[in-house]
Structure formats: structure tokens, C-alpha cells
Image (cartoon, rainbow, N blue to C red; front, side, top):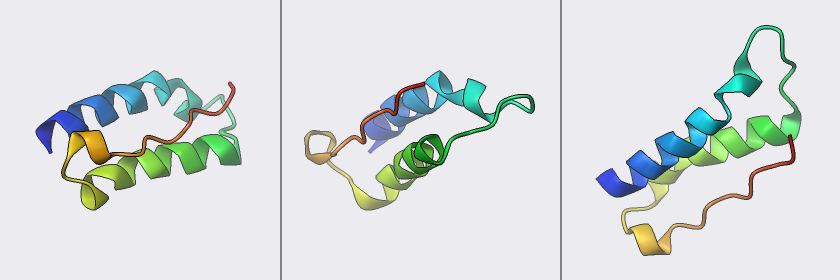
Length: 57
């Protein structure tokens, strides 16, 4: 599960710019980031994780 959280956190950091005060976050990006945050709660085996597709920026 630690491996899942590490990779999930990496993906979240890649999209942190979308949460800045001067940027309006799209609904697609909000959904993507929420799906990433939900992954550790729903998966314990890395190979079984279905990673969400990152929306276009």
C-alpha cells in the first residue's frame, strides 16, 4: 500500500498547479484528483490499481 500512496502522491503533485488561486480548476481535473485521493482506500495491491486518466491541461 505504501508504493501505491507514493505513486499517487507523485501524480497529485503533477497537478498541484491546477489548485493555485489564480487558476480555475476544471471539473475533469477535480474528478481526476478526487479519484487519485480515493485510490489508497480502495486498493491494497499495486498491480490491481486502475489509475485514472489524466485530463488534458
